[in-house]
Length: 337
Image (cartoon, rainbow, N blue to C red):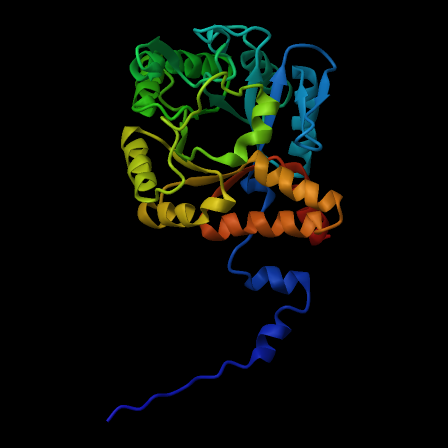
């Protein structure tokens, strides 16, 4: 004969442990900390240039000197790393600005490395901003329309990654979603002696409607077609596990899930399946929706921003790439004081 025992946990104990911020932090299962944040920056040629991005309040296209100021402010607030995106002065069908020795990202990396040596510099490795057609790879047009040439694109991605590391980047982050690009970049870096440079791969990057504001910021909207042939179908979860497994096997040191909030289930499954260092990218659409709703007084910006990023951590993210990194770090510091 079995007996069923019901254990009632006094809710007063939970209430007592939530009476002060210090106690809440002590017993919280998940923590959001500034050292887990990465700030994306958009850099372009010029000096003292700080061009507002209409769809992304408080985010700017920055000349390298202004990017240094932005990175310094974020670092002082507690954010340890930045992720650089480049906007070249000219574009062409070979994306030559992406791997030029004096390209805009390469300039910014050298300046940040010299003036802010403790900052972790991560560079986005992709070709879309540099291609005249706005796609992430070399395009071949023929019968049946245009298509992306995967293998020739890998060579350009490898050159781009190496040029960033030669300029001083600590981590490279391929975001193109070409097949085999992690292995190609790893082999190319190793051959050039950069065996210790980590790769942070956009391993599960979905063809998402949440990227709209980013394409204004990076000036990378495709001139024809879309990116659904090489980015992932939002309906697919098992595909994400396969993509991540492949990237880890090819040498990815960190894997990224992008976007974040609409894909928390994917983030959770990837972290549970592989236990690999995992980042969530809180993309432009997520950021802009919160900013717009807060501007209209519909939500509390600070509260919603902190809660949404805590959700990414709770789902399994070790790191969070976010345009709100500096603000979040500041709010967290204020909460501790």
